[in-house]
Every structure is written in C-alpha cells, then in structure tokens.
Image (cartoon, rainbow, N blue to C red; front, side):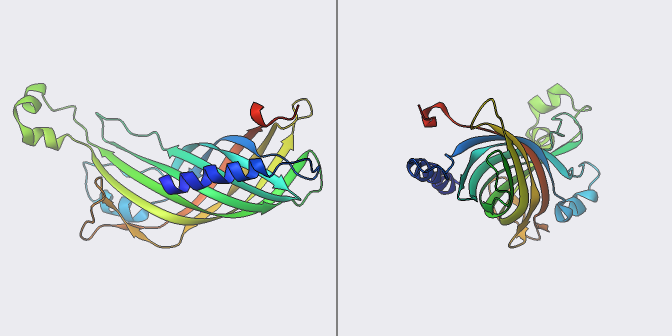
Length: 236
C-alpha cells in the first residue's frame, strides 16, 4: 500500500511539473468525492449464515475519496484513494460491518470538445483491502464474569477477517466547470470494478486459514466528484 501511495504522489508531481504555458493543457486538480459502492461477499456470508450468533454483511458501503485529475489534449488521467464502510456495526449488538481502503489509477478520453464540460469513459487498475467485522450480542453478559474469566472475555470479542484484491475498473465520468471559479467543477463518476483472481479470507493477523471461504470482487460504484485547483498551482 505504501508503494502504491508513493506512485500516486509521484504521478501528481510529474503532472504538476509538466504544466507550462500550453493552452491545450489543464493543470492537475484535486478531487474530493462522496458516494457508494455495491459488493456481495457470497462466500463469507454463506459461511456466516449457519452461525446464529453472527449477522451477515451488508452489500453496500458509503465512500469518501481524495485524489487528482488532469486533462491533456483530451486525454484524462487520474488517481484516487477511497475509504468505504457499511457503517452497520454495533459493538454490543449482533451485527456486522464491512470496510475497505482502495487506491486506483485511471486513464480516459474526453469525448466532448468543450472548455467547460468533460465526458470521459475511463479504464484503470487498483488495489482494494477489506476487513469484515462480526459483533455478538453481549447484553446478557455480566461485568463480573468478564472480569473474572478470560474465557468469557474471549467469547464477547468481535471476530475479524481480512481480504485483498487487485482489480480492473471501467466507467464513465462527467464534469462541469464553474464559470465563477475557474479550476473548480462538480461531476459524477460511475462504473464497475472486478478482481483478477478469487481470494480466501484470512485472519485479522493475515494468517492463512484452512477451508476459508473464497470471494471475488464484482463491484458497482458511483460518486459525486468535486474538483478544485490548489492555491500553489494557480497562475498569477
């Protein structure tokens, strides 16, 4: 993850240095996004369904993103770091939550020759890391029992599993630039992400487990994207 993050920062720096006085280039702009993604983990949920003390994972997550976007001769490049969570977990109730972090690099083409409007299909590659957390109902557990028994203490602890995937992405983006604030825009991005391979779930310490359920990424995503040019990149 550190290596991929470093590559993203290098990409921003290279794009920034490439901005001279050519009118057909647009400076890299920072992006902020809010949206959602939809992903079913059938393998893990099927295994959990046979255990009454646990609740299956939700299929949706809310997402927040931070990244950059650049257009050069109608070729659109961009990168993004995304955090997502189903926000459905309650530590003292029977519940579950899925959360993930993702990083991606995309390449697209603006099909509308306009200074204010962008419409760009895009493809890309990314990496996603997931954590599934299962909480138990502990309403009937007494304080003294937890204090005096390590067995009871372990019984009420949440159960966590990890999984990671390299993914491909494809989608469509749209943005409209503000007339009052050059370099700022609002737009939409939506698309699909899929994993190259299926992967088994691991323990919270990333240990390989025997007979672990296997899942793959078949994810739909959509977000509202806000862009702005940082003050240190604005021309005087």
